[in-house]
Length: 284
Image (cartoon, rainbow, N blue to C red; front, top):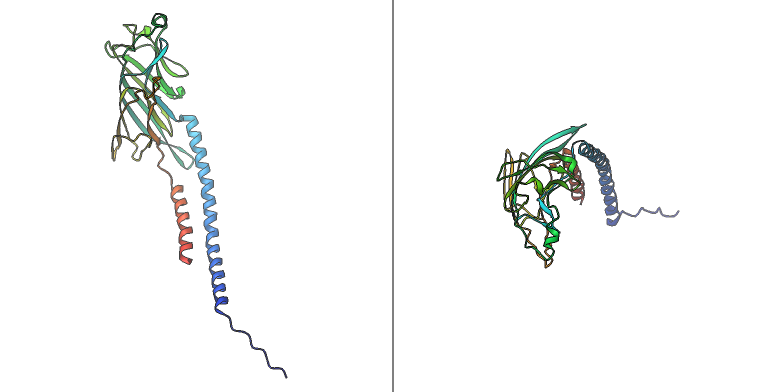
């Protein structure tokens, strides 16, 4: 009779391999429902973007204000001084289960111009009609506007163009935009991005609103910011003086990147990502 062969005992390596396979199986079993939840959140986020787009089409898209400038006489003249106030009234529009923030923004700016030195072609250029342009994009967002001569208190005749609001020099009593102050008030409505582009030599910009969690453009942060239960207040002191020999200047852009705080889907998405981390760390 041949002796019976005994089974070889499991080695430490075999035990280790079995444990690793069991751990991997459990981890995968727990990750599957998390992945399904993450896919569902992705679908909801897409629906959320559609709701934002539909609200923007009906209410208004991103609004871009700009400091007024003079066009004509063979050149462009930017304001010497400007005092600008931006008041932002925010609220939420509901589309399905989504709340989309929108706003009505009122820009009030008081500006003055210094007449540039006349060149060789001054006689030729003086015959050209000068006019004031208040750049605003898109012009379809404008609800109301007014341009006033501060000295006389008269409201000047203005019209909308592709560039924004246009006022001819003939509307002024002095027939010239130089030597006096003008006050411009524009009311626009939109959603998402709200910016103000300053080309003035010196510009004091003040912005206030009832939105409790604003996010400002990081290119030029406010000099002073105040947040409270009623909303926010921010202030910038800007200058866009020419930096090049050809007189070209770079506009300073300030404003809010968005007025969107976020929904519970953002929080759930973060929780899912942390859930994956907890599973991996626990089994590790």
